[in-house]
Image (cartoon, rainbow, N blue to C red; front, side, top):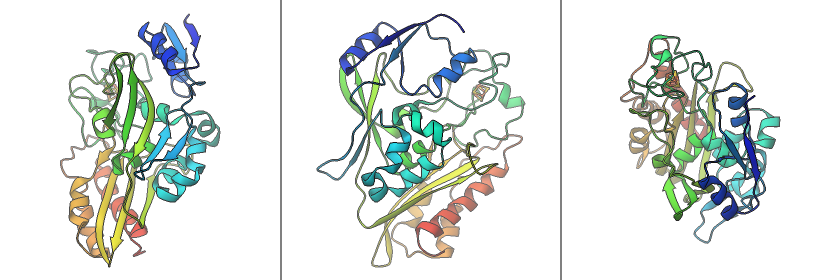
Amino acid sequence: MFPFSFTKTSTVAEALRAGQRGGRFIAGGTTLVDLMRETVERPGALVDISALPLRDVATTSRGALRIGALVRMADAAAHRDVRTAHPVITEALELSASPQLRNMATIGGNIMQRTRCTYFRDVSAACNKRQPGSGCAALGGYNRTHAILGGSEHCVATHPSDLAVALTALEASVHLAGPDGERRVALADFLLRPGNTPDREQALRPGELITAVEVPALPHPSRSGYLKVRDRQSYEFALVSVAVALHVRDGVIRVARVAGGGVGTVPWKLSAVEWHLVGKRPSPRLWEEAAERAAEGSKPLAHNGFKVDLLKRAVVRQLSVVGGTR
Ligand code: SF4
């Protein structure tokens, strides 16, 4: 291990001051400590934010769900408001990581977690995300788990969070606090595609901190759920995942929210699928037609072409489960 300073903070203001001096924020530490052990990340200063008062889950007067950034994954999954309004969030959390990790890791940290691309975590491999300008070992290497959507010639790593897929489907936003005040950013704008700068993964300004996640209200009754397809049944990242929420009234789909995980460099909103569903009656045929649009624009690599069909089949399956035709 290398030397670093460690500052404990108890208020957001204190944390922001310490962050301005160049410190990296740490809470559960379930990603960052691993990366430090492997010397993938070598921060010179850590700012412990685990004692900040960001642990509330609340439903706002407009019916939105607000989850504090420091709520543990396990606590968020079990919270009554989350389970009642958005089962897709509970399911995505409960299918993530392991019980031990879910008891430590926070909602903010889950969104900020870094890719599981094996080359990123191998300091002897070329990786533009870890070391800008060094190349991308995955492009010519083994890329079975990599992205078919949103990649660039500089990086094709997938975003690893299940929670972020559910939040993307639900069109959530993140609340940020920073040296210049507070602001709110749509999650779809917060998580960045790699483009020419794969090392820049979030639209964070220097010294900014996530304080909460907000999920807008869905019309009721809405049904939702999360499907995760992976190589083994637990403690594994998604090859493909699908988050679905539907509001059906008088036998017609009025609202559809669909996103895919394990396929994009960021959680992938499946807008073409949503558009095809709205205004139509649920049926197995409709699910098949909509799913045909799921992989539009995809660019499979040498070893991950199977994700195109797997994504379509996962969309059909999860639409039929949530849509009540199964
Ligand atoms: Fe690095 Fe991205 Fe290439 Fe993986 S896919 S080696 S993270 S640049």
